[in-house]
Image 1: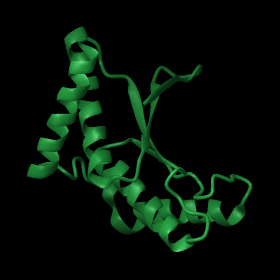
Image 2 (image 1 turned 135 degrees about the vertical axis):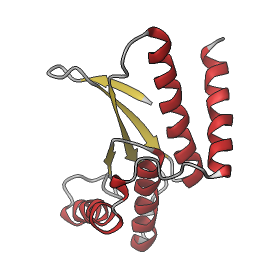
Image 3 (image 1 turned 90 degrees about the vertical axis):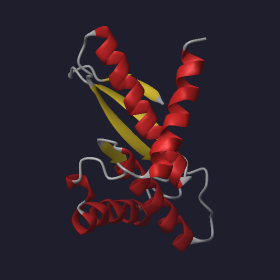
Image 4 (image 1 turned 90 degrees about the horizontal axis):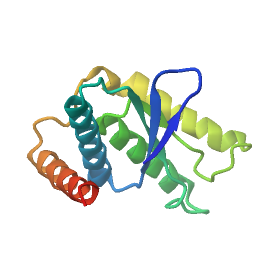
Amino acid sequence: AKLIREINTEKAFIYIELSGDYFWDISKIRAFKTLLFNHAKCEGISPNYILVGETTVRNKSKDKLENNILKLSTEAMSGMIGGCEGIWIRPFNGDYSDEFSNRISRNIFHLMQEESYIQHVSDTSSGSYFIENYTEMIAQKIYSKLSN
């Protein structure tokens, strides 16, 4: 995750790259949010950040457009289910000047927002035994690395 504090705002933007591993990304985001919240609580401050999930171009192929669209959709969905406040869907080929790939990214975002209504659910993955345990395991690993 990388932290960027915007000059004209009091909130910090934290960008988490979505790897394409669906359950890993969901649990990673949930673990990170839990640790941030607990840290802020221990310090007696309010958590003042916006978590943004950003898709990656590392796992995209040059010749299979359909696969890239599915990969982008899966990455975006894992970010939303994990609890990101924002999603940055990069063009599948990494070229921001390519109108077609930009349009595909916008369409994926609009489909997520207007077709699934997932942004209206507070904690989509709550109660999933697998995701809860996976999140706990990741949080413990992160915490053990931070406490060393």
